[in-house]
Image (spheres, helix red, strand yellow):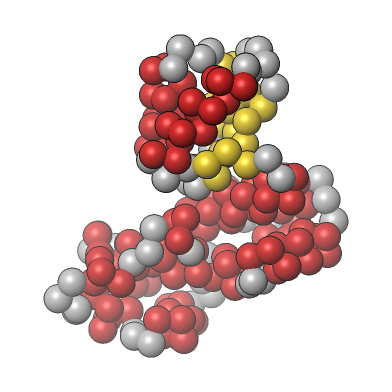
Length: 188
């Protein structure tokens, strides 16, 4: 049996969900972003306790198949955005089709109808949030960020950043409190 969990987007999320299962003494086979594979079927009372515990920390169980597909798309995009070097020579549509085993036209139609935005725009929003994070850390130059995220040039990154935020990367970096303009991954 598998449980699908909305808003699990990072390793800290995995640890938080793992703690819930330990506290509730519910064993599982595997725990990945967005999915927990259980060893046995849950009783209704157990499922209710899991749901309540998850909601208390900003997660929720997903029962609807379409919502599960959309969450999986989001997780693949987040991984693609954060670790693009793993996907050199593959474009996002190929990666999504390989991971979800569905045609790209099906994925784009479903994603757009439920989320109100296209897969491409969502991927750009994720990249922009990651660029904000990297700018705040101030460990990499803009050229290094462009290279890390597989942008063809620093100018292209800057143009896309300004188009989506209204600020250049330098303006963003020079704000008094740039973190106030960041969104959490589940809000994008």
